[in-house]
Length: 120
Image (cartoon, rainbow, N blue to C red; front, side):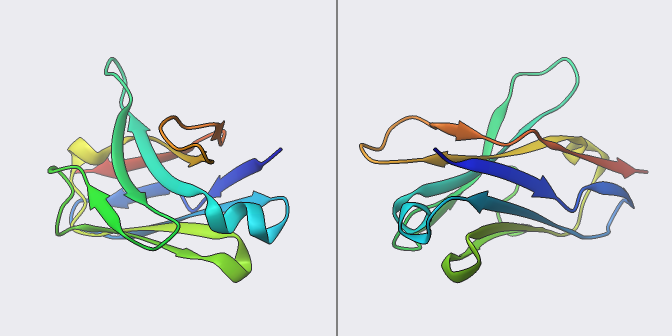
């Protein structure tokens, strides 16, 4: 079993930056083999994938955040990060991290979410 706890959300002005963290509980080997991802859900909208990082470190991003957001992971700390820059009001949402364990293909564990609000 894996538990995920997000932190780092808050209120920021447009153009600003935030770094979200997602810390997993459980043994390090489990974390290492998981694909980690960040998702977000804005009011009245469906949840969407923001970024994903595989166990090998390969990444992919939603088109809307490419060049502005960076996902990374520190396996020793069992933590995934989402560095967000050039934020705009459209980035306002609850951000969730998720873990996809083998066999890959669906997110098996979710955090409780952290609110990010970007003011104009």
